[in-house]
Image (cartoon, helix red, strand yellow):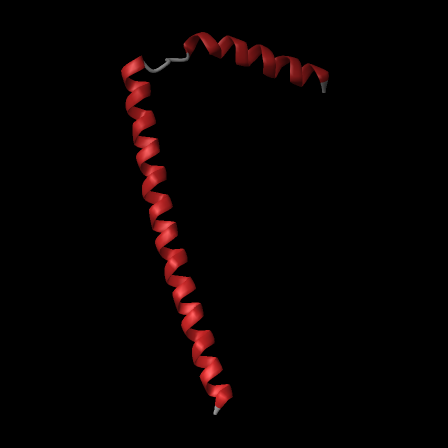
Length: 69
């Protein structure tokens, strides 16, 4: 088992020089894309949450009006 771990770590260090790191401009562009995606996702989830809350509140009011009768 120790030999497998040793080979894994050795292989990881052998692959490290082959890694192509993004340039500064690429990193900035990718970061902006991720932030925009997170913002759009947050807005979508907030809208879905609001819709479900309104629907749930409506159903509770509807159920309450049936009890009163």
